[in-house]
Image (cartoon, rainbow, N blue to C red; front, side, top):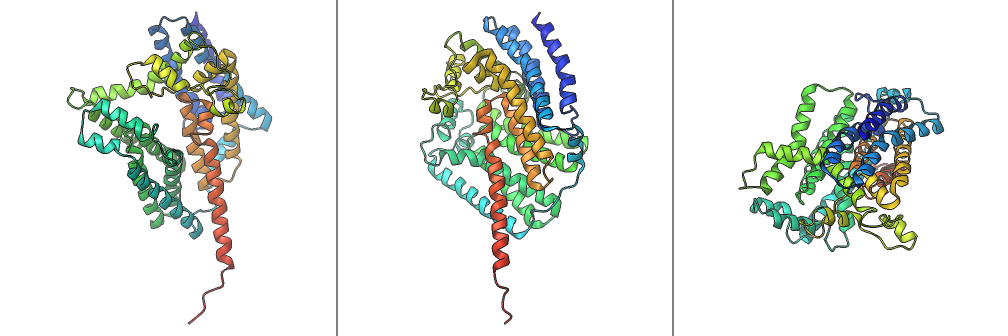
Length: 438
C-alpha cells in the first residue's frame, strides 16, 4: 500500500514541479536541482531502506520521505503566486548576457586581500593543528582508526579561537574565491584572473584535503564545474565524463589509502562511494525516525542551538546522539547528520516534516526569484551556483544549518561586503589627486 502511495506522490510531484519551476536540466533552478537529487539520493533508495528495516518507525519514515515530493513543490508554487513569478523568467535569466564587469582594479585589490587572508589562515591552521590528517595518511597508509581520530581532532574537536573561521573559509570563502576568479577570467580573459583562479583553486583544494574529508574537495570542484556549465550554457558530453572522473579521484584515493593492504580495489572503492551517495543519506534519515519518539520524546526546537538558546532550553546534539545510537562501534564524537526532515521529525514529528518541506520550497524559490530578477553579473552567477550546491546539502543537513552554518546567509553578506569595499576603493581612487608631471 505504501508503495502505491509513493508512486501516487511521485506522479503528482512531477507536474507540480514542471509547472512551478520546470524540470529541464539545461536551464536548472535551485528547487529543480534539489528535486532531481532528492528523487535519486533519498526517495528512490528509501524503498530499499524500508525493506531492510523492521522497526515500526519505518512507516513514518517512508511517508515523510514521500511527503517532500509534495510539500516542496507546493512551497515553490506558493512563492510564485506571492511574487507573481513567471516560469519564462528562468529562460530569460539563463539567456541574457552577463552585465557589467568585476575585472577592474578595485575588485582585483579586494580579491587579493581576501585571498591573502585565506592563505594566511591555512598557515595558521597548519601551525595550530598538531598532526595534519593528510600528512599522516601519506606517511601511514592503512591506519584507518588513527586517522579517523585525527580527523575528529583536526576540525570538530579543535580547541581554537579560530575554529569557526577555519570552517567558514573552507566551506564558503575558498569556493567563493574560486568561482569569482573563474567568472572574471571567462569574461575578461585577463591573465591576472587566470592566476587568481589557479592560486585560489590550488590552495582551496589543498586546505580542503588537509582533513582527508572527501566532501570539501568535491564541493569546490563541483561548484567550479557547475559555474562553467552555467557560463557556457551548453557543453559537450565529454565534459561531463571528465567532470565525473575529477569528482571521483580524491574520494577513491582516500578510500584506497585508508584501506591500504586490505585488498580493497578501485571497484570496491567506487561501490563504497555509490553507497555513500545513494543509500546512506536516506538510511541516516531513517534512524532519526527510529530514535524519535521511540527512544526519546520530541525535542520541540532543542536540536537547533539558536532556538534552544532563545527559548532557554538545553541544546540537544542530535547528530552525535543518533550517530552513537546507529553506529556504537565508531568514535564517541561521531556526527551523523541527516537530511532536513530528520531533524524536523526529531523536533516536531510529522507536522514539523510537512511544514518544513513547504518552508524549504518557499525559501529556495524565493532566492531563485531574487536572483532571476537581479542583474546577471559575475557575483549573481557566483550566488546562483553556490546556493544551488548549498541547498543540495539539505539531503544531509538540517535547514537551519544549511541557511546559517553552511553559508546561504553568509554568502549574501560576503557578496555585499565585496561590492561595498570595491565601491569604496573606487571612490577613494577618484578623489586622489592626479600624479604630478616631473
